[in-house]
Structures are given as structure tokens and as C-alpha cells.
Length: 260
Ligand SMILES: NC(=O)c1ccc[n+]([C@@H]2O[C@H](COP(=O)([O-])OP(=O)(O)OC[C@H]3O[C@@H](n4cnc5c(N)ncnc54)[C@H](O)[C@@H]3O)[C@@H](O)[C@H]2O)c1
Image (cartoon, rainbow, N blue to C red; front, side):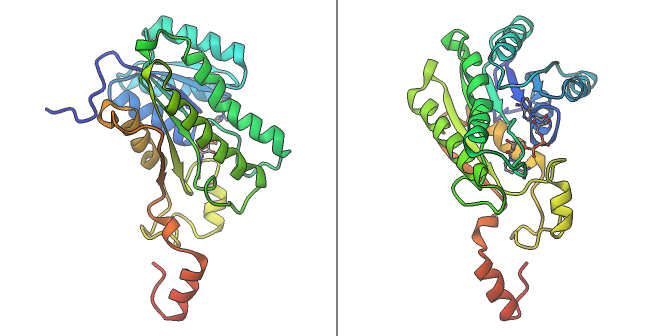
């Protein structure tokens, strides 16, 4: 059977934020595609649960409980991952602070950037031929402006800029891209989504809110050899939700056509 994505045998990946939501879905999909997975998360218990689920299903995973912005901890987790799996070709930098959390602009932007930068710098310490592809979790609230806290838009724009800096310099010849989701139903957003219309998200032309697997699919494609000519891109994955402005919704209501 033709393997379209084309990950080489014995590929390995680091997934940050692997205990929950998009990171968990990414770790589990990577394992189903045959990759060995190093699961990094603040929640040691959550990282263990994801790794156990992967191992029970016949995959290979090891858990690490760490704050990914802690340079020493990231370097130690990287070294242990290398020891267990050999060269780690892919990095999915998914972890980031919650967008709902109010915070000082400078501190929150720095914390968000460090969630991408510190794991990347630990990962880049491998020999160049190990490095193949990195994907960073940004948000549609980067290029747009979110309804939440100010720092989140600034921080996610900065994630895109950081990604482009890696993509342009291509240390070791690697590729880098970013994924920009709109609302995705995860433990982080579930209560808000429920309060504002539930999973059948009326503003989205797809008629539903995004799911973690929608984003995991895109992350794994971008990391894979199939995406070998895709570099430095910010890929919006939102089911087309950006197509409908508030004005569009009001006009659709006024003209009697369903907004969905
Ligand atoms: N859910 C959405 O609607 C949405 C939309 C756009 C972008 N995003 C981005 O996707 C990413 C994942 O979001 P999610 O909704 O899956 O969240 P989630 O809360 O379900 O999972 C995030 C995981 O990251 C871990 N984490 C956070 N900071 C960490 C740190 N410093 N070190 C280690 N682990 C850390 C948390 O413990 C948690 O397990 C975030 O970067 C978020 O900004 C989410």
C-alpha cells in the first residue's frame, strides 16, 4: 500500500502539551502512523496517561512531566528521548498558556514564545541530519484580533514570526510551519463553546466546531515528507470560519437566509 505521508521507519517525534486536547490528539495520531512519541507536558500524570494509552495500543511512547519553558528540564527530556528513540526528526510544539488567562502583556508573550523556543533549542542540539520538520501552534487570533485577552493576539503573532525565523534559516535544513486553528473543542475551551452555541457552531460554514483531530491531521501532514516543499507557512485550519464576519451574519439574518 502506498504510504502517502512517507515517514521513514523508526521516526520519532516530540509533542509538547501531549496530555490534553490538540497535543494529545497529535501524540496519538503520530503513534498510529508508526512514530515513536516523546510526550511532554506540565501534567506528569497526563503525559503518563497519553504514553500509556499509546503503548497499550501497540505504539511506542515515553512521558515527561516538565514545564517546557524550563531550559534544563527540556534539555534533560531531549537527552532521554534521544537515548530511548535515537534521532528525533519531528517537533510538534503545541503547548501554550491558556488564552483566557489574564496576564501582563510582556510576561505572557515571553511565556508563549518560550513554549516554542526552549523545546526548539533543545531539539536543535541533535546532529543536523536528524532535524527534519517542526510545527508550531499559533491561532487565528494571531493575524486577527481575538475577543479574549490582548496578550494572546500579540503572543500568537510572535509564534508565527518565530516559526518564520526558523523556516528562513533552516538550521540543519529543517522545515518549519505553523497551524492556526479557530475554536477547537478541547478541555480548555469546552465550557466556553457550550455557553456560546455548543458543538454546532453556527458561525462556521462547516456547521460544527473544530475537533483536536482536525488539527492533529494537519500537524502530521506538515511534519511528514509529503509536505517537503511546504516551509514557512501559517496554515489556517478553521473550517472556513474566517469567511463569515459579524456583518455577514447580520445580513444573512436580515435577508431571512439561514446563517448556516
Ligand atoms: N483549543 C482552541 O480553540 C485553540 C485554538 C487556537 C490555538 N490553540 C492553541 O493550541 C494549543 C493547545 O491548546 P488546547 O486547546 O489543546 O489546550 P489544552 O489545555 O487542552 O492542552 C494544553 C496542554 O499543554 C500543557 N501545557 C501548557 N503549558 C505548558 C508548559 N509550559 N509546559 C508543558 N506543558 C504545558 C497543559 O498542561 C495541557 O496539557 C495551545 O497553544 C493553544 O493556544 C487552541
